[in-house]
Image 1 (cartoon, helix red, strand yellow):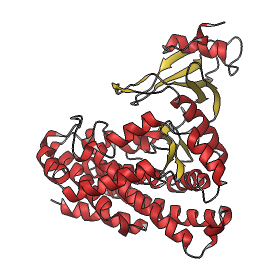
Image 2 (image 1 turned 180 degrees about the horizontal axis):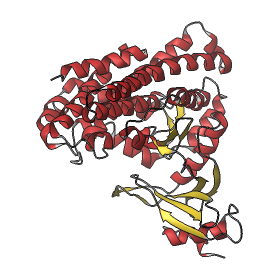
Image 3 (image 1 turned 45 degrees about the horizontal axis):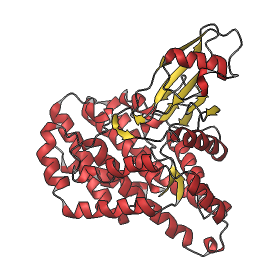
Image 4 (image 1 turned 90 degrees about the vertical axis):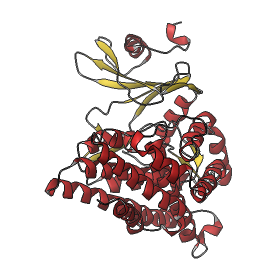
Length: 409
């Protein structure tokens, strides 16, 4: 018997002892130290390091409530979901997720590879760095983890079993509230709107009945469309990156939902990165190069996703109807429609909702932040309301450009 036979929320010293007594990763004479390094909204993240060798691992523990607020009471089973999803993603998209060393059901924690040689992508983009491999890597990850977990490819009974294993109701409810509902009405009073934009948001989001209707349609699609095993929180804060490597982390929101949820989140967070660069970089070659790379990456993410999706369909589809001429393109079009809608939802919720992004909040000039937020929200409305018209990378870039033009000085 050890004290780790009963669940409790660990502190850094506890995690060091846990690693020494419960893992077989370190040498017996390792001199271990633990540090809490997480800055996310949900879980507790620790790094355990051997002072002698520098070897390290990450221990991620699920608490009974979210870190962002005790109002979000959560099942610690999300740690199991995350560990199992990472191991599945490692098989479907090799090299694009961290290695999982252990899942501990008692302590509700997952022990995984330390990616200290990588950087969180959002932090890197706030320094206006560029990553030429990103579009290639992230589209491979999305096509492989999404299409290959659908009824298109899987035995239908196996897909249903997986759906039941990854229900994830508590974290889905967070998404249903914070992404699909509150940004359009603030019915729980939790929205956090930048003061100078309050009246504009009330008029253009809360006061737009047509927008609210489309958000309602998207919400009920999210509730009912168990299409693929989605990551559920795929943004630039859930990606570790270097110029040569991309690693997707944090799939604790995973469940069977619409594929476009993941793709739309990636595009929206690239738009946030563009908005930050536009607001903070002075005119000149660096600004032009960075904004140009973001714009080209948005186009590439959509177009490479389309190309790889159709190729993977041709190579892997099993159901007899998937060979009907035109069905693959029709199916992809539904994913792109959802992608545009979710891109708009993410742009709204990260601008006016409870959980913001530093891309916007770190803009210190008030007028520049007002403009950046309005560009994001204006683009969002178009993506949501006109989502049937978004099919190519050029379409998504054009939507953003129209919003930029609407708020040009």
